[in-house]
Length: 128
Image 1: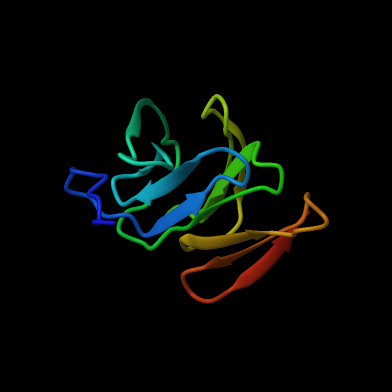
Image 2: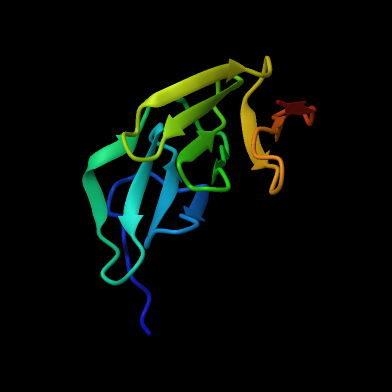
């Protein structure tokens, strides 16, 4: 199968995550938003829905789905963790976690209300 170009803007994607149950994936853009794509060719981007309250500002910010796929979590250049409703793309909650950029998040696979996050300086925190 030939490679597909799924994105034509001038921004790169430091993180791509498949939805745990739907035929879609999200891509964190350096352009300060998360885009949604169909997971089957031709991999069309949803032009009407995106997650864009967090900041990226050139950092390799990651995003992750919670276990049931109803929430999308993202780090941010302001040190916060953003919780988005996957269906509406609205911010559910924002936690100020670090003084520097929050670059990665992991959701506990068995205890869904526990997350771990790390920041640009290497600090790791666990939240409930």
